[in-house]
Length: 191
Image (cartoon, rainbow, N blue to C red; front, side):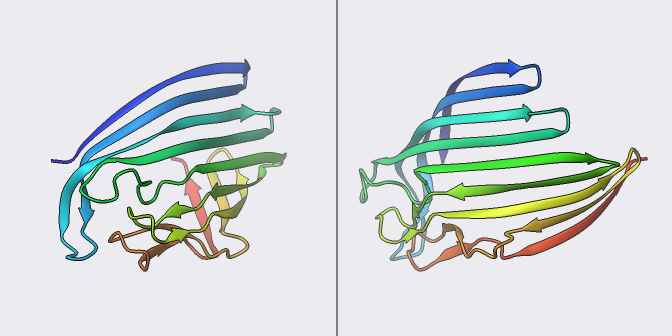
């Protein structure tokens, strides 16, 4: 059977009463991962892979009306044991990834926000053939918030960036595209 082991140790620091800094080092080991054989297209339980790195997150209020949530992770992945591709970087492991999201309450119930999610390139196969390029995708929100209800407009991928979330079937020709530009309007009512 597939088995995962996660190890993490970190520090949490309250910089101010409303702002926290968290950092952690981590290591994830996966044995007998289900991998599709790129020739036979049959799933196999195979080998051992490891991803380790560091995460840093800053979250809280810059002012009473301005909030931020940001984070970055630096990863190092390696196929530790395998019949082929041993020593390579596993598919789908970016060297770096990060995000920043901020919201600001304008007053009168109005709120605006925006942010970016960024990801360095990553391999589409365990053989390290084919790479998805890095990307940065920008989103935004505008909301009218009252005690009993909220109306919100969310804009996703504002600049309509073509990007890839990953690959599948361990093939450099099969990728999962990210969401194109989109918008949603939502109404929430509290009973």
